[in-house]
Length: 238
Image (tube, rainbow, N blue to C red; front, side, top):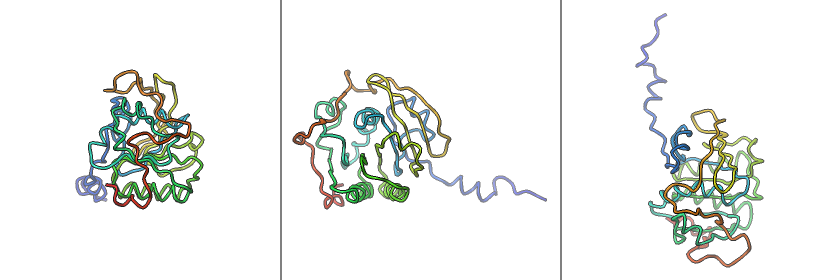
């Protein structure tokens, strides 16, 4: 039996035509090296599972958020765990006039808001499900929305969700304190998970001390420059 030459094998030819994945550099060379695709995947769903929501994930994402906001559009925060604290965001180099905060009233509205914001092609959509239950169908819907919009879609979920299946391209569990961040790569597209690393903080290019309080936890008036976003305006918020 004669085998086909490797160069003629149709499966190998198909794989060879696939485009390189689109990524956004993390701002951390060690993390870029640990990620198979070399950065945060664009046009795909990413899940971060921090021990305490609202700080670790933003300290990790801040360099990438600055880079993403060189594009037109907004950083959309869906149901964050507080009101953005202007000095902390300013210290991270993130202008609040590029931030939109959305507070959906129901779980159904939450899912619709994240879906539509991702499909609208915003540079970054960062969402906290909180008490919103997300099953595999919901997560698949958000993955497809990210593919259509092509931006960075990140969910900040509870660590207890780590054992649940997810279509996300990347899943990271976050731990540690103010000066270092422990990262466990639970899943990454195109490669096995299971890797762990520790990143020293503050992140690159940010003057010390790093912002520790990203959000006002008490219910206070929105900080200047934070624009509440109604679902009806998502389609035009480009």
